[in-house]
Length: 260
Ligand SMILES: [Zn+2]
Image 1 (tube, rainbow, N blue to C red):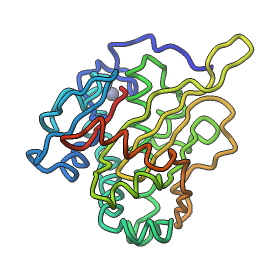
Image 2 (image 1 turned 45 degrees about the horizontal axis):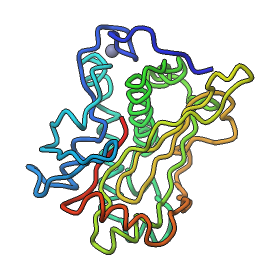
Image 3 (image 1 turned 180 degrees about the horizontal axis):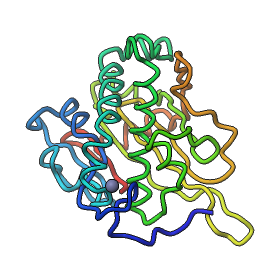
Image 4 (image 1 turned 90 degrees about the vertical axis):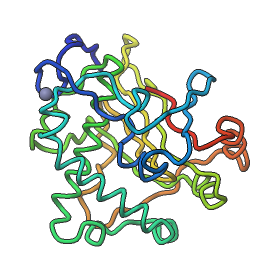
């Protein structure tokens, strides 16, 4: 069962006072997509209203303080760095990755790929932990133990990295695609109607990190263990539908984010 977070003042990772705000959308991703300072104003769509994001330091792209500065900076620095390397590789090899539908982690990271791949997974777990904490859901102990160097949280975390064909098509048409967060959805319940699984996703251009946290997620082997990362093509919206949505919602720029 997912439990409600009780210590809203504490760092969800170590328990110290939370005084640091992690980016919902990574600062380096925002700068890579939109320039530094932003060449154009990315927009976020929230509750049917558009808000402009002024720069990569904007409050709109950060979580509330739910980590301490030591965890958010020092302790997780290798994870942030590994994820940056992974996404930079994706950004620089998009045609090849879209055509082959796979990423060779040995090429993306070079020597030492195993640790870099594991640290990329840890960055994603940190991101997921911040989303859970932001939404007052307790971060399961096996997720924090994994960040501390423990075993992979198989069975309590599901993560699928997939290509969104419809977004890839839009990117090719020069309509952007940008960065985004999915809504947080409770998707499974026990007999007492208590939520047991929560799901959402993080999008970088056409690459979707779809995740779930909860019970009995053992049927979904976690990525980043094998050297070849195969990328299934995820469910797409009907042709034209996503394009229409993006046109309507972000006529002046790229759409960013949505959910918290
Ligand atoms: Zn901490």
